[in-house]
Image (cartoon, rainbow, N blue to C red; front, side, top):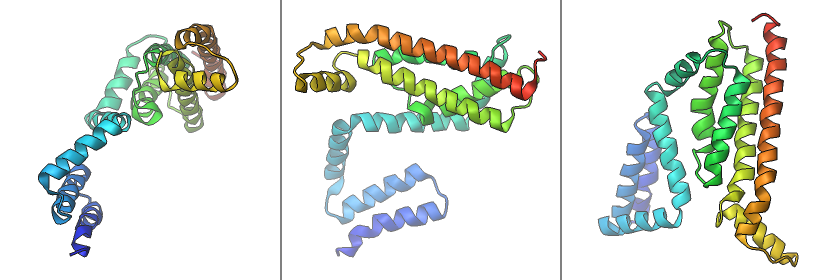
Length: 226
């Protein structure tokens, strides 16, 4: 009977080997494991609910990934590329800079879009590539790789510096606790006020740097012709 509890693992292995729907496989495996393990339907629902509440940040991240994946499968990349293609003279550096501004605003309210995997890759990068194609150019592989790094860098800079502005967020609490250990008593509001000019300076420098770097790379791969 103890081996029967491992049927769920077997279902996962067979399901992925046959390339069946991953969400359905995991759901079936969870239900079978709960039944064979004596947990029952009520116990399964209780466990899922408790796990969701205690790990809600991770659960929200997973939900964002699922939603993004579904949208991407139904033409999210193509729509993002077409949208940026309608904007005249839009450059890759300008797209990355605009994303930096938007990301900073939402990060200040501790709102995450899924990071590089959940937002930059499926939405920002197609827009960046679309800005190149809108000029009648074929995206060079090395150029695109550079733009991937720039887009990811903007995501990390905006999130790192601006999420600390959210009073009560994990970043602000970490800074407050660190200062307290060093003998400095300060409030979260005071920390937020001090961080505002630092965060603004960091993002502005990043936007200018990536914009200038993009212009340099564009000239390198496509020349000076417009």
